[in-house]
Image (cartoon, rainbow, N blue to C red; front, side):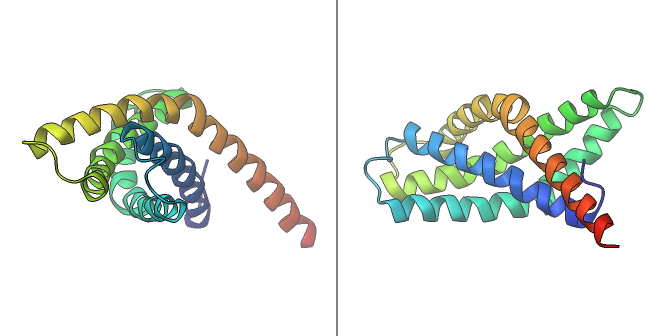
Length: 163
């Protein structure tokens, strides 16, 4: 997968875009705000979520998830175990932080209607985790890896052809 900082940047952008897009639509649906907010509000929620997710992915969750995953899978020869472990650690970390963002945006759009923020957070986290893990492992992860590999191969062939 990504071997350079530039490749990691492209891979992170693609993965964040896909995951944040689907999870934004999912959360808007869960909160019943799809028909109640304007298109511009939906786009701005997505854009802010994308920026937050990308920063988390590049600087906080991503590096820590990789460290944990490599420690957990250091004795295995099968790359799939490492990929699945990184994906799982990423989902846990991103769901943890992005659920805070989701809860804040829910309170902004719908108002504070609960007696306990902690209970609301765990409900949001649970719903996000249940959706994000299979989305990451079965859909977005393979799709982004396929697109990334295809793009990077064609890009490297073009670079080699120009030399």
